[in-house]
Length: 266
Image 1 (spheres, rainbow, N blue to C red):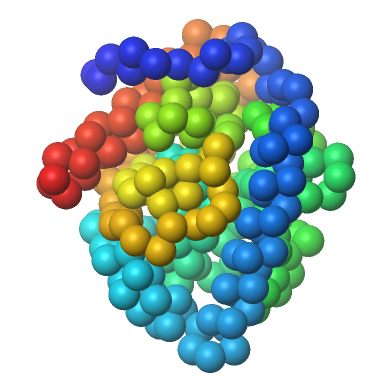
Image 2: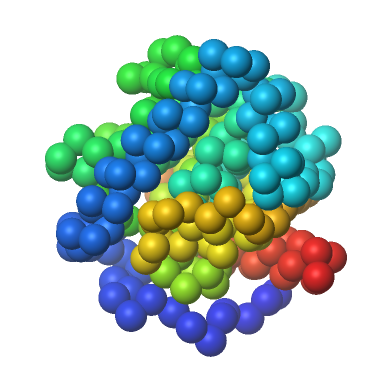
């Protein structure tokens, strides 16, 4: 199993905590400005050519490459667990997944000011049924009990969900540790297949601390790993230790996938 990274969040809460303070003014307003740009790009792409144009622009601008697309299950309950580099790479992951899993649900940020960047991208990209398919992660690292229960119902019905268990965009480009427990809880309580997905290059193009201007040079790669499961536990069998072990297993799968992708892309 991979060891934890040497760098961790300075403001890291306890593992059992699901919340933290509101984002800083720089974070909040930067997201607002960048949300408009991402939504504008989605609207432009949707009008002119949809997914294929989106991929063409990404390949032309960032030499975008995908590995392991065949690892996306065509049917059945599936939890796609992703690293959280930038808004741009989140959008690329979503577009890649929704081609094979129409109706994909997304756990994404939604604060008290009603800011939700991924919702704007998805709506302008032409997606429908968003009020149902947008699962709200309140504040920066918070998943409400109601949304978790709704997500479990989606998985039990055979649906698919995209979630970034790091809980917030990386500050330094490193994979964050530990993960928030929501993804592990869903995997254990639903028995769904988990698929690890990582990207590289997004942080260099659009770091969280400098969302504007988004650089138009760089190289983005996306890798989809082998599916795995965590089991299917009842509520009485789910302990803190079980949850932490499952979360560590998710982290190890994502970390190993990211390290191998970086090595191949050197």
